[in-house]
Image (spheres, rainbow, N blue to C red):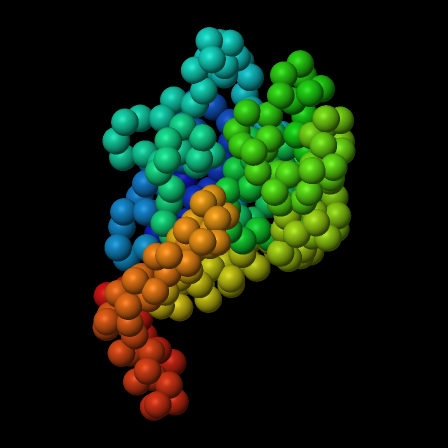
Amino acid sequence: MDVNVKTEDHLLLIEINRPEKLNALTREMYSCLARAYYQLDSDHELRAGVIYAAGPHFTAGLDLTDWSDRFARGEGFPLAAENEIDPFYMMSEARCRKPVIMAVQGYCYTWGFELMLNTDIRVAAADTRFAMLEVKRGFFPAAGATLRLPLEIGWSNAMRYMLTGDAISATEACRFGLVQQVTETGRQLEAALAIARKVAAAAPLGVQEALASSRKALKDGEQAATKVMYRKMAEVMKSEDMKEGLSSFLERRTAVFKGK
């Protein structure tokens, strides 16, 4: 399989596995990713996702032979009506409510870069190079970079790389805040899993509401996020996890949360 999905405790591990083609994305791989995002969102036992890739490179980009006709017709990504969430957050309003952590190495070009912009925590190997090569190929980024990269690193910084196709090093990406940790090459997945396990050990309802509140503030503004914040807080305060959190604090032990 070009995309392998498996569970480990409360984590959903999503592996891009087409290294012989530098993990070039096909339509079928896109659909597999969309189904994995739906699984992460809908399975109560899952608390976080980790995306990573086999081989020396995360991806060299799209498999254009599989996509060019679709894009030429202006059709975008082939999102199914049910049981899928667009991992690029372009084709519908649906969002995965669970955090996604991403580990990258080598080339992280075009769709890999744009996918990363929708993840919540990113770890990069020291040899990672990020680039949007579309302008060097005759078209432009259409999986979210034009919408999100300026918000992440500022307008002129985004244009500097988006309009030239130049690469961003792992060190520079960390300086920009695009990635939160740079590791030795080969240790990026280990580091991403360590972070994901910490997220999964935290109270799931609290994690999901923190993520939702932050997203709402970014999308609709602080006032809109504040308007619903305390109603959401009241709901979480009534949960079993809140009781467990208080009990564990008083008993000086590690909390065991159930997401209820």
